[in-house]
Image (cartoon, rainbow, N blue to C red; front, side):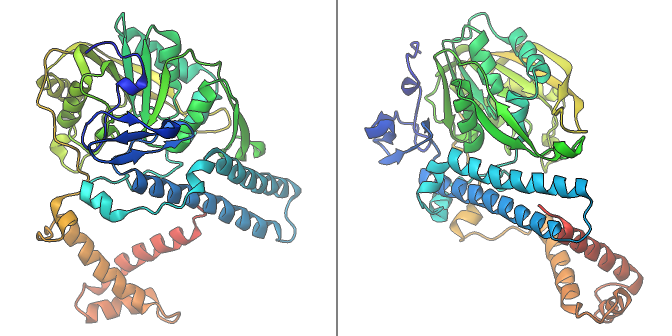
Length: 453
């Protein structure tokens, strides 16, 4: 492929792979699908179903704003208690005020996302078999922003040291899949000879912040450490900043598994902390990366290797992973294991050393491109096929019946032992076993009711 001169030369429709056209206000349009793709804070918003994805992220931002409001209200309630220790009162006031301020900062940063009321069109998600992962909220990797841009350079320097050792002499056009808080993409572009670097992620908070910071514009956001070291560390206003990056670094919002780029667009693809968390087989991902690379291009991986798929056979070891990658027409040039600091906030008692797995593999030939990623199975989409009697479904159904029965017995009068007798009378389980099941269930319910977030 000829050397691309701009980001636009690389982009393709995430629905049909056709080249995208630029329209008014620098938005993109697919002539084949007749679908327009907006921008968010100046970043291309290239999801397969852009209106639905916009609506889902809008809902997740609103959820986070409501969570901050709710926490501030609970803190106000705590502050109304009599005889609070002065130090406790000061801490609660600090965190309450931080919640209010963080609410305002997030609203300003993501104002474009909140300005339009586009609903999440579930039916269009179903038609395209795509959806945002339900376990990925706005704040899922929020701490990464602070790690990347304000905790100091120990972690970032260790990561860049490993990637720099793997980089080919001429990285050319580079794609970072799952760029997160953006620091690795920034370091790679700023300190290498990459002609163009594209950082792809689906989280608008992370990429909006990274884009602004890498342009040299400072950004202030609050850090709420999980395990604060001191009273003042319960809420810390952080200054996220960096020197302006040299021209050629671009941020794109989209799905890694529906990457909106033309085949063979990149000379180097980097996957930081990614390959073991995606809901696809490694062979599927390797095939997609093969398709994104130009002939002879290199795939650099960096991060944990801790697969957690439902099928045990897919939870590969390092040796198995390298074999799968070889089957996808890659030649492994080098692999290494390094221990580096991980998520060590200066305001938190948490933080650890992590063993990371890195490799560089060169594409030696093309491989059959996997079909478009479909997050949902046919029986969920069409509603016509039989719902499979999965073992997990059956176990959940049995648990739901029992727990629904228990909930119906809670009347403010019956004890656990009374409930267990009734379960035995209904032949659901023996009394002794029922007591343990009911107690465990009620413990979880009680603990959930006491969680603040």
